[in-house]
Length: 144
Image 1 (tube, rainbow, N blue to C red):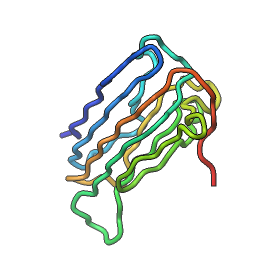
Image 2: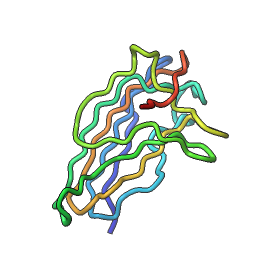
Image 3: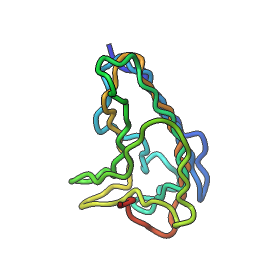
Image 4: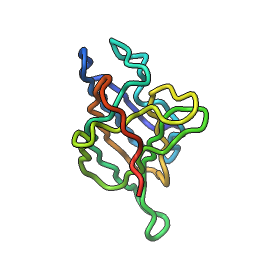
């Protein structure tokens, strides 16, 4: 068996893009899977892609250990991946006031965003909606 996953480019314009990703887990999980692929966007922004807004919902399946939460780890695709965000629960994060969150960070970064599921069990799921800007100011990952 394998998780049921889907990645869809909902909108791809000259300056903006929206990518929606879903997962219904059987407990298998995902590890360093490219979810936002700059090569699939037209025009290709390369390393000049920024995350403008992220809507997310991460649901924990049937817990087998008290207090264990499912999470999603988003990283910059690079020779040494850099954490962008670690998400649990649900919400919306806006990065537009700081010029966006750059997706290219680390040595030999591609601009792609990879995803790894953490503590995913049967019944765990996520829905992510990435609102992206092609080009623009580049601000690093959140710290502290």
